[in-house]
Length: 377
Image (cartoon, rainbow, N blue to C red; front, side):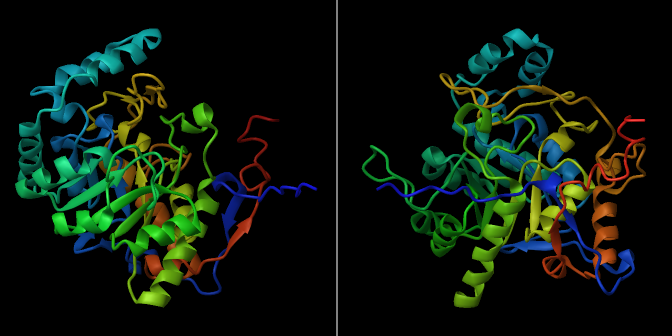
C-alpha cells in the first residue's frame, strides 16, 4: 500500500504581513548595519553578482550609499578587456536574438589576468571587494582574487548543498576552501533547514537563501524548482538560530531575489534574514552598467538558458533607491527609509530585533480596501 504524499503550505512576500509591535521607536534611532565575518556593511543590502549591476564603477557607487555589491568573476568583466562595448551589444540586441547573442558573448574564455585587475579597480573605489564564483571554478579563481585583495568570496550556484555527487574525483570542499583563502566565504543558494545546517557545519560565514525568485531568473519555469521566499527564509533562519544555540557561532543568512519594494525588504528581514541581495532594483538605477536591462547569471548556458534579459528601465539614482526622496508611491524607492519606518513600528532598534516581529498570513494584504488603487472602481 502506497503512502499518501501531502503538500506543505509555503508562503511568498505577497501572502504575509508584519504585525505592528506593542512598543514603537523613532526610526532615526534604528541601526540597519550588519556584519559578515569581519566585513561590516552600513545597510543590509548586497548587490547581486550580475553583469548588469556589477562593474568596478558601480560597486564604488554602491559603497558610497553604504551597501556592498558583488562582482561575477565569470562574467564579462573577466572575459573582455573592455566590457562596456559588450554590455552595450547585449542592451541593443532585439528580443528575438538576445539569447543567442549572450551565448556567444559568454563563450569567450575567461582571462585570469583580468581577475586581479578588476579586484584592484574595485579596491581603488574605496569599497570592500566581494566577488562571486561558481563551485567548478572556485579553487582556481578564488585564490587569485584574494591575492589581489578581495575581501569576500561568494560561492554561488542555482542550488547549493554540502553533499554533491559528480563525476569528478574530488569536488569543491568548503573546509578545504576555508584553508585556502582566509577571507569570509558566503555560500548560496539554498532554501531548507537541513541543507542550511549542513552548510553551516562546514565552517562558512554566510548563506544566500532563494532558488528562482529573481525577476531575470526563469529557473522555476524551466525546472519547476523553488520555494517561496518567506518560507525559505524562515526555515533557514531557524537553522541559523539552532546552530547558534548549539555552537555559539552566528552565521548570517541573506535572502536573495524576489525583492523589489520596501515592504518586501522589511518582510525578508522580519522573516529572519540578516540582509537581502537584490538585482533588478539596482539595474533600474542611472549608475548601473546594464543600461536599463538586467539578465540572470544562468542566462548564457549553452544548452538550457535559465534566465532572460529583462527591460527594467531607468527609474532613478542609487541614492533615490536607498534613501529617497521617492518620486513614486509604489514602494520601489527609499528602501532604507521604509526599513527604518517599519523597524520603528515594530519597536526594533536593530536587525536582530526585527527577527522578533510577528509575521502573519495575510493573502489579502495587497488588495484589501485598494479598489481605487487597483482600478476596480
